[in-house]
Length: 86
Image 1: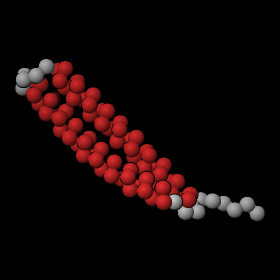
Image 2 (image 1 turned 90 degrees about the vertical axis):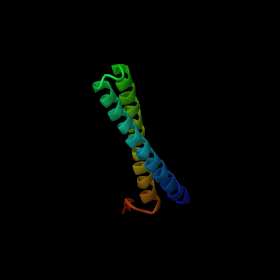
Image 3 (image 1 turned 120 degrees about the vertical axis):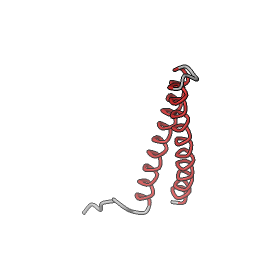
Image 4 (image 1 turned 180 degrees about the vertical axis):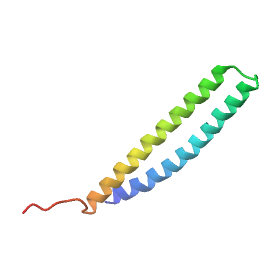
């Protein structure tokens, strides 16, 4: 149980950090779009920023999946969802 609780805290911190990173990547992608529209950079910079945003969003989803799996494990450890056979 203590491992599940520690994992929950660790994953919550990781999700929060990844959310901040994803927001930053989204801002970078928007800035790249603006710079492209203004003719400052080529479209390759936009594609690169969008690729990095996609990778950040994908990592966030993986962390959230791990967080939910950890929550289910904690629920089971605490005795939830176990049916007694009679």
